[in-house]
Structure formats: C-alpha cells, structure tokens
Length: 546
Image 1 (tube, rainbow, N blue to C red):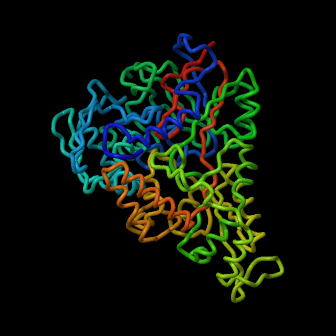
Image 2: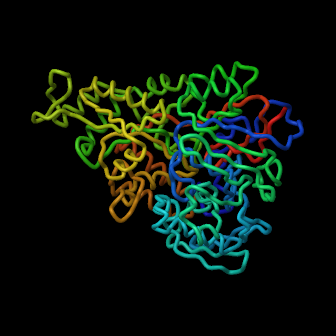
C-alpha cells in the first residue's frame, strides 16, 4: 500500500512489485490463445476456503478472503499496477503538498454507484465512514490514523488534510479495504452494508447464504475499469458465484469434476496434480505484507520473558514445517516483511535460526532448569505451559500449530491447543487472553510493522488495534513512527531495515512463510486477473468459453 507520498512508488517498490508480478502468470490467465475473443455471458463459480468473512463492509476488516469477495463490488480511488506504479482509477489525478499534509484529489467523471448515487467529492468524503465508531473498523486505527479532515473544493475535487505526514497514504487507497462504498447507503442505511453492500464495481451483490455462497450479477452500466484492465466496460460474465468449501479435498475435487470453475487457496498437496492435468490451469502471485507467522503474546508470562520467546523460535524447525505443510509450494520467510513488499530488508536472511541447543541454554538462563515426568520444564513448581488458539478454519494452520507444539515439547515447553470459534479467537487475541496464535496480514506496505507491532496499536477498552502480540518497545516505536512520517524514500527504507532487524531480536512472532495466492482453473476459464495491491484474484476481464 505504501511508500512515499508521490504519484509513483519508489524504485524499491517498483523492483519489489516487479518481482511479485514475476511470481504469477501475468495479469491474465486462461486456457486459450491470448488473441481469443472474449465471450459475453455465462456464470463463473469460484471455490473458496472456509475463511468466510463475517461482514462485507470493506471498511470493517473481517477475514483474509474479504478482499476476494469485496473487489467485484467495489472500486478504489487508486490502482496499483503490476509494475508497482500507483495510477488513477476513481481519482483522475492528485497532488501532494510539499509538507506531505495535504492531498488534493480530482475525481473521474461519469462514475455512478449501482444504487444510482453519484461519484463526487462528497462521496469520497464518505470515507470517514471508516472513522465512525459505529463501523468498529480496526483499520481506522491503522490505515487512516493520520487522517484529520477533508474539504469539498468543487464537485469533482476533494482536499484531504492529514495531522502528520503519512508515507503510506496513497498506497492504502489502492487497497480494497479502502474501497468506495455508496454514499447514499452510508448516509441512509449504514447498518445494511455488512450484509448487502453497494459499490460502483463491475458486479452487483445479489445474495449471501452464510456458510455456503455469495452471488453477484453484472453491473450493466460499468465503464470505469482500472488502467490494468483489458477492457473498460461491463464484465463479460453474467453472474459470479463464490462458494465456501472449507475442506481442501472437497475444493480440489469440485474443480477436477467441473462443479466449480476456479479455486482459490489451492491445496498445496494438489498443485502438482493441477499442473500435470491438461484440463486445468494454474496461476500464482506472492502476497505482500507480513508473512504467515506464529504470534507470541509478549504481554504476559511465560513469553513476557524475551529469553523464553527466543527459545521457542530457536526450537522450531521452520523450514521443515513449511515444506511439510506446503509440499514445497511456500517460500520460507526471512523476516517480518515479505520480499514482495516495498522496503523489504533483503540482507536479513538467515537471522532467524533453528538451534535447539541454544534454545535449551536460554531456558536454563531464564530459570526453567528442572523437568517433570513429562519432560516439561518447571520453575518454582510451575510447568512451562502456553495456550494456543486454533479456529480450525484452515487445515494448514492447524497442522502448523500441531508441529510447533511437537517442536516446543522437545525443548520442554508445553503448548496446549484450544479449539475455538473464529470470533472467540478474535476476541481473545484482542484481549490478550492467549499465549500463541497464528495468522497473516496482507498489505502493500512495510507500514504493516507499525500496524502489528507499535505499542500504540495494542487494543484497549477505548481503542481497537492490531498489535495482537502486545509488544511494547520504545526503540521500535520510534523507528516505525519516523518511517511513517518521512517523505524521503531512502530514509524510510533505512528506518524500516532497522525496524525489521529489531523485530528479529525482539521475537514477538515466528515468521514462517511468504503466503502466495494459489489459483487453479478449468481451461474454459479465461481472463483471470490480479488485484496487485493485495495479491487477490480478480474477475472483471474473466470469461468462460463453451
């Protein structure tokens, strides 16, 4: 999402996003020659995993798949292209003041929301919906925290004022999480956005059968696609359906049998089968942001002791776990930012080690010297025990926790895995009522480190933040705050390098892998695209052959 407050990303972002694009098969994929004529009509069915959102309001962050189900409905102000540049979409142009505090957006003409409301400066001003406490948006405390206010200069021009310079502002505006919701719906019926969202996108929401599917139909008036699209007009598909198929085997078999046309989150164990099947195609892209990690609660015992956190990390053979669970489809993380993210520090590979002997020495130094009959370390008669939360919605995540549990036991750390609902997991991590969990935060900026680890983002009764590890380190806070405020690319990159180095030392999490989007499809499917700001599959140019 972020880098400097300029119309184009820095050279570092361009290089990293080019690398991201190279991981996939380009913007479009399909089973026929590139010069085949698109066919209008038909229905495309996508099989998605069980990580179903609990709300479709893009401003009320929900689950990892929120962007996949929301992008068909919503457009964004800015488009991030595969080369890393930020290009006009619903904004036709923008200017940034020298001090980085004022952004003036001139808006694209002729855009309308599917409820008939107009796209204008007042509609963009409705972005403040995210800041409304009633929206309960954790993004308000993260992505637009520096937002101060805005002023309608003309019907097509809005001036946005920030309280401090924010190097990531233009980048976050390219994400679907800051997509444009109907101003009429926000004003008249905001309570309906979660279950019946209205946007200006190429598809119009039809119905959500929770636990089963979401359906959409083509927006016939659509004519303002982003510059990366192959055509600007209405989608080719008559209808789009997203089915939630939690079981990996069920999802893959649905594709192989033709019950669905595309599957996202292809089971890693089936990627080889897909690639060898002449009736199937495969495309992938690495998601930017924070790698998938085992989160560690630093706010309470036993992991408020740095030595115990470091010992757990050293006891875990990350490479063995990642290869076992992903069948070689995932790349081992080298730090707290993925390589496809701007300001990724490339010189830190190898700093997160596997060293069980050193783990033992650290636990001895922390006073956990005795062991009970189960081999678990004890101190003052108390076992070295940690509670891990597992919602169970993604099988690979459960496997990762189980293998982490086994590795920890060898070092004398007992991990008790508790199966909880996704909502219970979210509530308990926000309160700090856990010791270990796992997850990922996808975003197109290294500012993800501020979101995840700055002490200002620890959830309190008055403020919902995303620092689930409850890390509080003054030196890290200073680095991340300076990186957010600087308008100089090189300075920002160096600050983020120092922050990534510091995080490896602090060990608030165990980074495991850089999560790719693994998308498989039947060869009658053509024109699949990518939302590069997130690494999610896109359907505006998609069509189905006979």
